[in-house]
Amino acid sequence: MMRQIEFRRDGYLVAKSLRELSETRASCLIALTGYGQPADRERARDAGFDHHLTKPADPDALLALVDAWIESTASPRVPGRVEEIAYGDGVK
Figure (tube, rainbow, N blue to C red):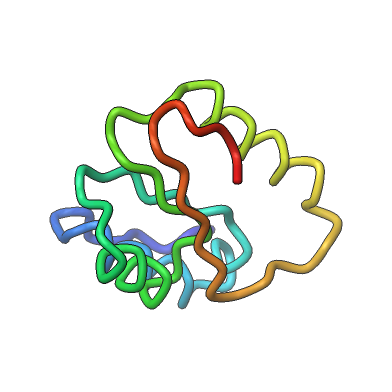
């Protein structure tokens, strides 16, 4: 049974908490934010996010990330990898 997580925190703390739980450690975490500076991407990576999307995110890019993660679930997760996808840029 998954432990309850306090969700009244910011997304960075939620990501760190999810990475600490064995049940959610290998999940794909995507930061969806209005902040897109290099320091913001670094903070997301440090918190445990796999990807960093800036608003407004391209729905096709988001779906491509989810599809790619589903296809790769047999592969081990690479910790600390953050990819930046800006609106309209597609998956990089």
